View (spheres, rainbow, N blue to C red):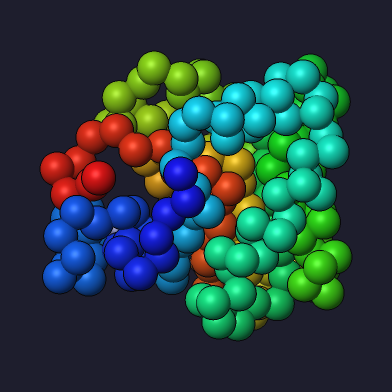
Length: 203
Ligand SMILES: [Zn+2]
């Protein structure tokens, strides 16, 4: 199901049940380090199957397939970005899989937007346990400090982070903190899908 971008939290893009609200409860209480995050659709049904196929079965053509959907979500935001960085895998996971699904989504998007793809601007410096089945607080703890950024590649730039799925925002937030520590001016996030599970103000 595509997200109605008129009824999401202005900051993190979480769908809001009460259309009178501007921000979700999480952003009201503990704002994320990103200037804004948006996702194209809910992580369910055929999209969930497609992302699993991209991630685990080398269905790499899906990167190009979803570029129009990412563009459709990104362009109306009018975010002023200089470069695009895919959320990295740890080196061990990258070797095991042979590719990073976030890069497969980010590369054709960067081409379409005529922006540089700077994969080496951010790295995952330690392995984190698989996040599948973990609670939100476990996920936040897991990824804290797991990413490092290279100031020579990111300092002074507005950056768009790209990932396949937004679950709790913990990973995107940890990436943004590393980029901001390295001198990035602003960090935005774009994901293809958004997992909807817990908070009371979500659909
Ligand atoms: Zn929010």
